[in-house]
Amino acid sequence: MEFPVLETERLILRQLTFNDTQDLFEYFSLDEVMEYYDLETFKTEEDSQRIIQHFNSEFEKGKGFRWALELKSENKVIGTCGYHNWYREHFRAEIGYELNPKFWKQSYMKEAILPILTYGFETMRLHRVDAFIDPSNISSEKLLSSLNFSKEGTLKDYFFEKGKFVDATIFGLINK
Image (cartoon, rainbow, N blue to C red):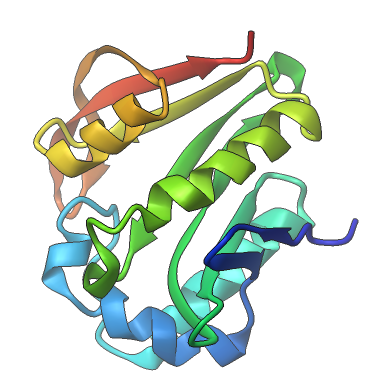
């Protein structure tokens, strides 16, 4: 299967390549980005190469899609977004995303997620999309709410990340 390329007014959503290593390292190396991420802050560009390899491997195995969010005006990757934990038999997947802080609060992630949701519902035949976020990640909660995700509850000690158990608030979006 060929990786789908999607386009918005300001972004090209495409498969990650090793040419994106520096762009990813620029923001994955920041504690403010990794605060709510289930990985440690990146220390080297090799960390970026490993995550690119992981995302592409998940696509090759048919477990999900992770798009690079390339800013058209700069040919620069400013974030990623996509599906993981794709359960075809249940017609559902989880969505995840992150963005370079230089581009926060400019509606880039909402712009990217809209065609990704359309792709999920129409092409992947998803019935439900889940998002798990840290309960204190207010920006992510606002984003999901603006996309009509419903807050369904908080799961206590749901994930083990960075040496400790953490809560997760689950949001869901049903294709109607």
